Image 1: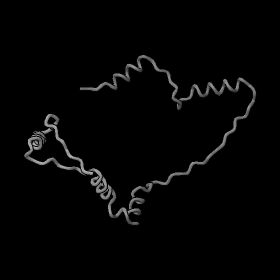
Image 2 (image 1 turned 180 degrees about the vertical axis):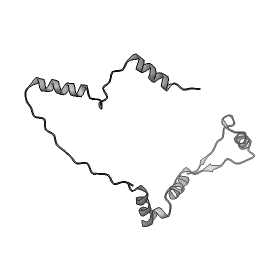
Image 3 (image 1 turned 90 degrees about the vertical axis):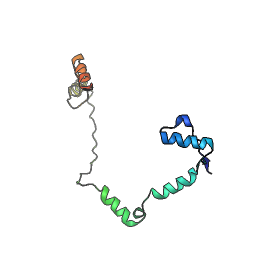
Image 4 (image 1 turned 60 degrees about the horizontal axis):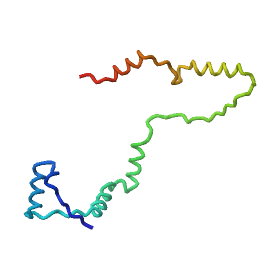
Amino acid sequence: MPDEVKPNVNEASTHDAQLAAESIASGEEKAPNVDFDADYKTAQQFSVSDVDRTGEGAAAAEAATAPKYQTSQPVETKTQAQSTGNPDDFLELAKEVGNSKTEGVTNVSDDLVKQALEKGERKN
């Protein structure tokens, strides 16, 4: 179902658009009709190329997205913690985790925050 375009002279973004809106408003030119449904259907036809509709397109897509390097497959391992009932084992584990350098636990000082803010500021 076509929709009629109703241009607003005050909202025209360029001089040409303003002139076109004025001529449509004055009746010198006919307002264009836009059929969104037909335009959408036409756009869908152009969204997939002819080669993509064939086996050749599928092979080209597979070749383009194929990994360039061989990667190893992950192996699932199961670890079961042995319950010892000794609280000292838990404390030792907590100390190991707390001192881990690979974890996201660090000490943040005011100086460190200040340095981060200075590095993040835009330089003119």
